[in-house]
Image (cartoon, rainbow, N blue to C red; front, side, top):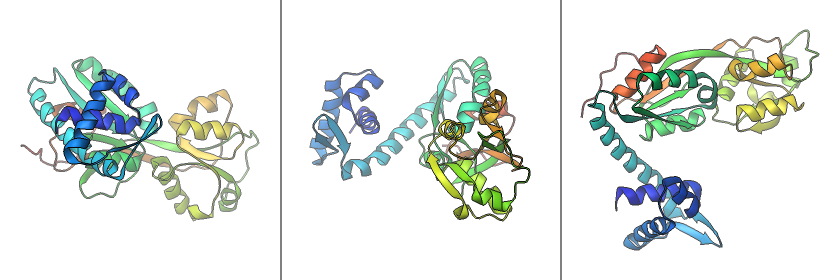
Length: 299
């Protein structure tokens, strides 16, 4: 079993398509197919169901995927340890961020980082808070930046910045009084469970004496933009980051409901026992916040 075979298997598993995987990795379809066939023949298992033109992971393939990712991540981490000795002249920093952070808060910081360290590549993945924490824990990425508290003893977590949630609606006729009864009676458009935006909203609502289960939820959608668009179309009210709703408020397509939800923090995540690269330290220094004084593991 080679690292290249693992890389090709992961690419096919993530895309469920040999051609798409070969294009993404710039290798031939035959090379991808041969790598999968070699893995299957050597271990006597089928990793994919092949039905018509489609492929799907078998049970064995689903169990193998996180292990393959972990092995490949460790190989990349080993390579990056050596690259670090070049004084941040080359290397890759793998970061995962939740949607609001990746789309609105982080890009200007990455532009500044790129100007200072042009040889360092930032590989940025976008996931909700729950999935981002899993990627940091499993070693797929070194640094996570998320919107909610993560309960995981393997991870160090510290505040990096903050913003505010704003409740918005399409109707320009805003309520004079926003009380618990009004919030319970409203139709809500929500992000999916696991989203930092949703968990932060639910936390604020509990502080107001409202249990999230008591809300009337009309739609659950997987992105900030889809929630905002649905609200603009009249699906109900919702709470999104002030960074997300600012352009729509300015354009007049949505209106802010007069209910303060307070500030929320953005948090850095990293594994407590994994190597802390100079590239990650440089990015955190640029952001202006560093994790509390935990020693930097060596070896």
